[in-house]
Length: 433
Image 1 (spheres, rainbow, N blue to C red):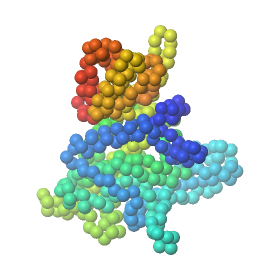
Image 2 (image 1 turned 60 degrees about the horizontal axis):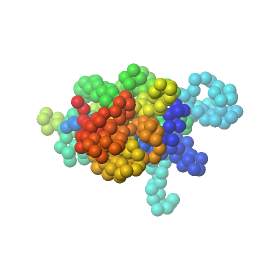
Image 3 (image 1 turned 30 degrees about the horizontal axis):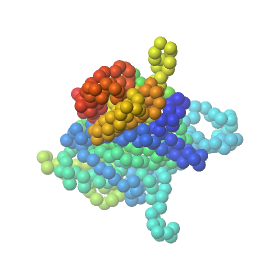
Image 4 (image 1 turned 120 degrees about the vertical axis):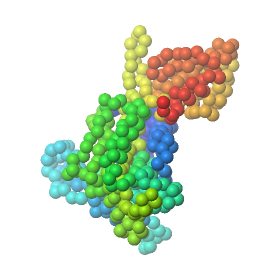
């Protein structure tokens, strides 16, 4: 894990937030490569689960909502952790994260457990006397429930259908840890799929299949993934069934995505607290009912972290036993799709390469590098996860061909410059076979 964190900082994937001031625990900044990786990840998720389906529509809701939302959802009463403090060193721990009955740092005795609500408060108003206290949303789904009726009437969707949203959520984690796995600000990729109660189990199983295949499609190793089924006693207050996709990180197994059967809890609660009827009228059967909800909810940051861990490799190359570090990120998620590298900077080769890179940039994200030996430039691109490096040389001036190097196999093929864009796009497209 230490090597991955170091590479993320060195190559511009992820930085500690406010690092020049010593950082702030549980908050992270995605750098030039990281922001491209996560953007590609979210776009692929949207392409797969929204763009290619006729039963899912999108929503982008406000982060700040009416405080009644969180009362109706149960967050004010239920969304808390049990905390204990060490009487000796004064450190604070979540009770469910402890494996012993004494402090793991100093062996001291703990205080009695007490509740701690994890929502982050904020205030809306011009001054303290009139400001309204509310919260930064701890999850993205409640806005979907609050907008349920507006969405299905305006889009003319009929049950069964889903509403998808990608966005920020905030939780006042007491013990952020494991790099970006558990943080205070994160992004969710979430769908609320509305169906009849008698169809809950069918759609739950269908979503399990869709979810699993997506993780395989973005390059995660199947032998590092598993389903974890929550026992009844540990289910959230709204759920009758929850299963998680877990990935085996260097620190152990961790959740990437939850799949929950929320029943009709949320729509019923918001109907009760708002006084607005959120039931659905089925024009086919002339019946009115409160739909049940199947919720696939994935963490964008955690999935990005899984991709980084899954992609990191150290390989021996050449006869001298040299080692290269390579990020074998799936081409469709790679921050940079292709790098253009002139063999030399003289004799017009650099100018030819720059012009070619500018043309490719109109098609996909590219990078130009003429600094240092060509082998060193290849290594830099390997660490950035760039799937293709294109070398422009003297033969390019003569016959218009370039050498395209594959990141994973390091094999090189010669092809006309006019064929390169289609070749790279074919490897990096979101489109599935």
